[in-house]
Length: 182
Image 1: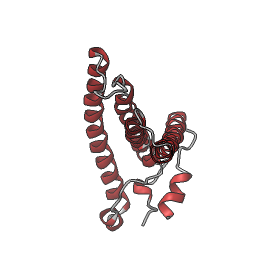
Image 2 (image 1 turned 45 degrees about the vertical axis):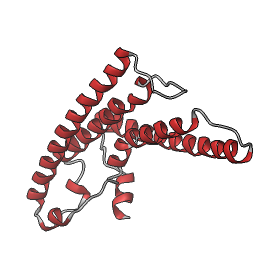
Image 3 (image 1 turned 180 degrees about the vertical axis):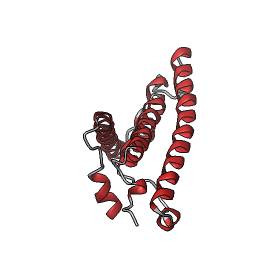
């Protein structure tokens, strides 16, 4: 768990941009946790209605799905801030300080480019749903731009966190891959 404890005290230095992004990522993490909690409460309510009161449910299943997907997407920047994503550090451990920094810059740049593409298409998809007035084909009929907004929001904040991580490595505020020098 050393990665977790070092990430909790993530390095922002006195850099205002890094502090802002860390605060935004933390807020996204709290919002994501609240969405998961809401999904759990709704699931419990749905179970009570269906199996205790023997009633039917209309909106609960769809709401839980949208909340869980939204929580996953909106939680991306917080997990990145904590370095909680799957990480294999065999190569960075084998490299020297300069090579490790170069590898971190390359991987963060490529990751940012990939996430930027996903953000672009996610925004396009959200906008299409909003512009065309798409609704789910269920009885509840949710306006789909609302749950689809998690795509540009989550990936936008994730991209911002990746850029902040890149800036922190370049400015030597944070160590590449969170590893100490050899």
